[in-house]
Image (cartoon, rainbow, N blue to C red; front, side, top):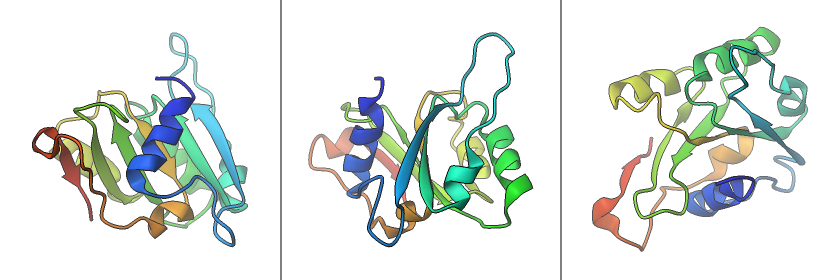
Length: 141
């Protein structure tokens, strides 16, 4: 839990949050706010070549994606890692245009997860693991 979740998530993805000539910065943000408070994520960081790491943003992901789409037509790759570094960790990978549908299909929209959004996600290969593969669930597309 906490800030290290993003590090655990990208370790699962076998990449980094930044990558030379792909993503020069990373912005950490929360997607879940107190009560009904609504804040925006830093879309400028994303469109200027950065990576977004959004904690607890799965429940609001549709709103976050709509906010991104107000600023750009780029269909960014996204990976969501649930239970990062735990025995029951699982990953859902897609693009902004189809990730909400994938989450609905697998009925996991309300579970907490870390959302990694940006071009660096497109450089991840098929995600695999060596610990407890029978308890892992991966959707890699």
